[in-house]
Each structure stands twice: as C-alpha cells, then as structure tokens.
Image (cartoon, rainbow, N blue to C red; front, side, top):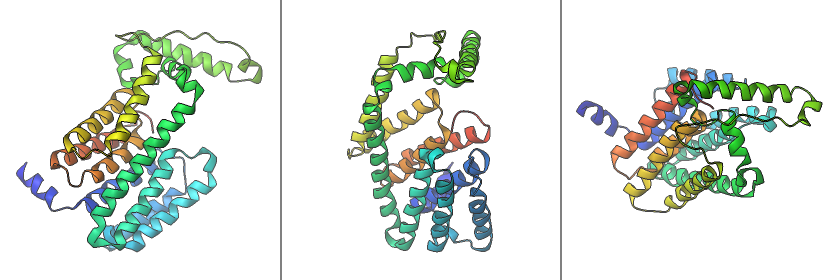
Amino acid sequence: MKKLLNKYTKNNSFKLGAKMYLIFLLIFFSIVSSHHYFFIVLAFIIFYAIIDQNFLTKSIFWGLVSCMIIPALVTKYNFTGNHTFVTLYMAVLFLIASFYKKFACKILELNARNLLCIMMLFAVVQKSLSKSFMNASSVSFLNLKGGFFTHFHRFFPENQKIINSNNQLISEQTKSIDGLSNVVELTPVNWFFEFNPSFAVGLILGGEIIFLLLLFVKNQYLRNTFFILFMIGLIATRIETGFASLLCILLFMQARKDHFVFQLTYIGLFALYISLILSKLGYH
C-alpha cells in the first residue's frame, strides 16, 4: 500500500487526469461508440504513445486529438450524445493546459469546476423546462422499461418478466404509424419499496441542484462526500457508464488541493465505470 501511495504522489493531477481521459477515449469509443471516425484517434494515440514517452505533455498531441474528434460531431451531429461534446471540451482543456505546463494543474482544476458547473446548470434548466419530466411521466415510463436499478433486476425475476413484457408491447406499438395512435397499458414494476415517480423527480432535481451549489463550497469534506455519494447513486440506479466516467475525471481534477483519499476514490470509481464498459454492463 505504501509503495502504491508513493507511486501516486509522483504523478501530478495533469498526468493522472490525462491518463484517465485517454483510457476512456481508447476503451469507450473503440468498444461502445458508433462513431467510426474515432479509429483515427485510436491509431494516432497508439502511434504517438509508442514513439514519445512524454506525449502526455505535448501540445501537438492534444491539438490533433481535439481536431480528430470533430469529424464524429459533424457527420452524426443530430445523433451525438452529450458525452461526445464533453469529450471534445476536455481534449481542448488538456490542450490549453499543455501550453502552460507550470500552471497546468491549476488550469485543469479551475476549468474542471467550470465544466461541471455548466453541465449541471444545463441539466437542471433542461429538466425544469421539460413538462414530461416535471410531471413525472418520463420517469414513470423509464421505470416501466427497466431503466432504473438495472442490475438489481436479477434479484427480482417477476420484475424481469414484467419489464420484458412492457418492452415487447412498446416495440409492437412503435412498429407502425397506426400503432402509435393506440393506447398501451403497461404493467407497473414492483420493487422492495413503492416507486413514487414524483418523489424520484424531486430527488433527481434536488441532487443536481445540491451538486451545482457544492461546487462553490470550500469545505472539501462536505463537497467531495456528496459528489462521491452522487456517483455511487448513479451506479445503483442508471449506470450511465460513459458520461459517469467523464464526471469522475472532472471530479478528480477539481479535487487537486483536497485530501488524497478523495482523489483516489474518484480514480477507483472511474476504474469501476470503465470495468462496466468493458464487461458491457449498464448504459453509455
């Protein structure tokens, strides 16, 4: 354990954050993503890493990575998920930090916090303006499809049957235009507690608002404890592995001055999410 901690302290937050980001880029977009242009990024990263052991700190490396993510955004812009935009923003962030090596860690810390703030602010605004979310209909529908507590389904065989039946009904309804005009009654999914969609809406929205506010709190223990619980909550409920992996990297970088235990926890959570991607569990 002591040797592991010594190895950890020899790396600064820039190098550790960059390694985590590149692991995500290599694994996530080579296995899960539908953006075929990312094979260029993959080939370049491997080639550059082989010939230059200090490639993580080179501006040209991050510049080319940033430029080569753009084709995926242009060709499939209407179908591109939020995680792809965040991936590009983070590549640009590493590019900027690589120009100012002396202040690289501080640049990452400040801008990681800014990115998290923007992401959570838009998440709160988007949900607040969505009628289907605020009236809990989208949350209720997601639960009927098995969108919550996915990996707990194996402990509830009856729920698995109900969810499969609901998904089959939804699939049949959406096969034709005439089917969309028909009303389909879906069977409620029963957990070990009564699922209240309205309560879930308040919990989700409240959690994101607290997350946003805590970004401005200096108390590292209060701030990071909530962030860690927030990320664990994602694992238990939605397991959105791709976006959550990026959140872990940003949370790690914003904790540059905080206790190393928090930093190691974010690395551990990142490793967990990456393992879920590799084992094809959860969502992206």
